[in-house]
Length: 451
Image (cartoon, rainbow, N blue to C red; front, side):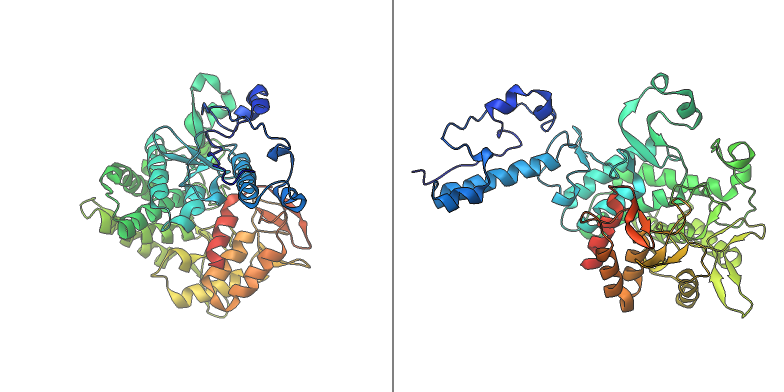
């Protein structure tokens, strides 16, 4: 009877002779790894049974039964890694289905069922591991920096480089190709990169010298976009006025073509993103005191929000607009995607408390055109999804910024999960009607909430 069993790591060894013969169907799990073959010859091959069945029947002693159980666990982990070309034990289990470890040790993080990497989403996805997995954070930052340098106006990027001649005319028209998946310029995208970079610098003493050109590029771009009408090179064919967007006047704020939802802005100055940018510029000044214009840009943004970014109701209560144009236009709404008006304290430690509380009361009410309350739950939705659909992101964000409802929001998210996970959105009266089967962002954010 076997008393000891060494279980070889299945990433590199745990193939069976029968699996090897199946070729690509199984070899796809290994993505280029060329492991030796391990051939089990004992009667009652362990992969044919659950481990518990052996111990119940007394066919194996305890050590071998334990090894068999570990073998099954390793095989289960391997199946969750089908999208990772090179396995990496430094990647948390939660992320293994969406992480690609690249040969240059950068890390590509797809957003879930869309196989592209957003700067915003990838930051949010690894944020819960910012202290426990510093090497992972550095690898993600390097990949993000590479992408931003490739095209600072893009918001999501491809795993593989695509020659322009290999894509259709419609994609070429939208500025896609190369590493670019979508070129919807979103101010919050660069903010997320800076947030992750600053945390790694402050808490893990990351040498940020290699990232300085990327930070300088972001700051220069934000300064250019303060005067979008006059100086911006950015055009997106789906925006009004031949891609320039709706008219804006100078405010000191910096322009964004699209919201964190990837929807086009109604007005070009997205208030939550500008507040996020101002907070991140404080970090830029800390990390790189000699990058010209950072502190001045921060102050101009804050002044712009103060003088152009609010509205006053009939009772004299002042609240933030969601977007403004500097010409008198104010979009009175909030969207579930972060940064949002609801989530301002989550991103900005220097937020104006009274102004935010007034805004919070309004956005989590029927006054907000995208707030929904139904039989299943309540929360904020988005014009990005069908009417009456609530995004768990909004519930999680509320729990993060308001401790008085944290448990309520946590329970609401757990109660409306389908398949053990939160989805993009669900119908307010029936949480089984949802959008996007696999959306990693809310599940990562929920990790923060429960911790």
